[in-house]
Length: 412
Image 1 (cartoon, helix red, strand yellow):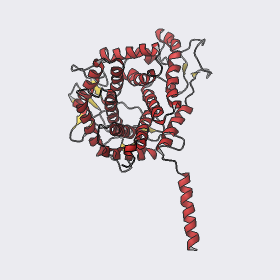
Image 2 (tube, helix red, strand yellow):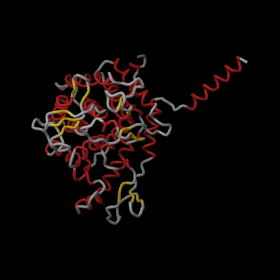
Image 3 (cartoon, helix red, strand yellow):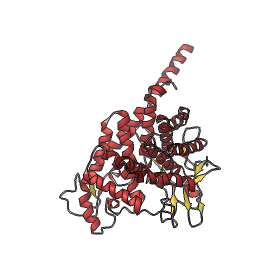
Image 4 (cartoon, helix red, strand yellow):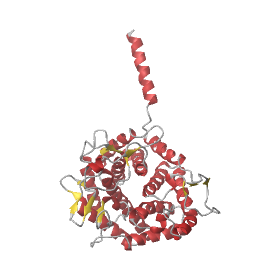
């Protein structure tokens, strides 16, 4: 009887294990990436007639024509997604994912003439209007960084023209404080948003690498230094979401994803900065300071909270992916000691539990503004597969896979 019970127990264990989602790093990366690829239609839809078309060429002009898939829209999370796909392709050695990003930008740019006509006619809410208005960093920074990664493969003149225009906007037109720090006119006069370090620095660093012009690196470094000055909270080791210049005061919360944007931006700068740059050591020190700071708040699940220092706020996936990426890449590049990989490993374990069998990422905070009440951050909705988490997940997974593949790290 005891033997029969033991055999039944073993059989149940095998069954449970077989039904559990795989946690192999490569499989996880492919699962999410493949879900995105499958969900991208590369079509346009008339929101009134519901007619779909593959191209706008020859199509009658209508303000109702929109990109059918959210992944084909000109939105900053899709710029991060493009970078994540390109990185995954590189680490996996699978051009399917780089082809996806290349196809996406080609789809947009090939159809821009149709929407440019509508935009010039002052049509409200025209699709891809942000390509032309370029009125803030959200409209150009992340999408330009993704385009830069694609431009390395597809040296199109219209891509370069856009990249040059975006660079000029950031350097000469975007609102800044008197000391050159990038800021926004809302919600108060000259408000500094932590998010904007990512919306500027990764692209500026890529422009510096592409052109060899030090002005791009100089500005990117200035932003990292100044954002650290205005937003770093020494007692907690975390960063405030914002700084209000009108009252010389920070906001109320250490919001997770804002802190994640800072970490990824600094990582991307270091990845593109010349190895002999005189500021490299200083920048690595700033990144390590942030890593040590946020490691103190990692939950036992491996995840981080929506409000990093508030364990009663929900566990959130996008900041976890961003932190995991920053740590894993810093270790892989040799910027920080390999012992810090344990932080990334725990983060990746936490993300594994948030990835569904279908390849969707759970518990991603939706797009977030700012507010004077801490309750605002507590109550921000979290959604299944919100686009803010997808690119960071691919970046994190790619670096974790890179670490696992490295012979020198195999025994650590």
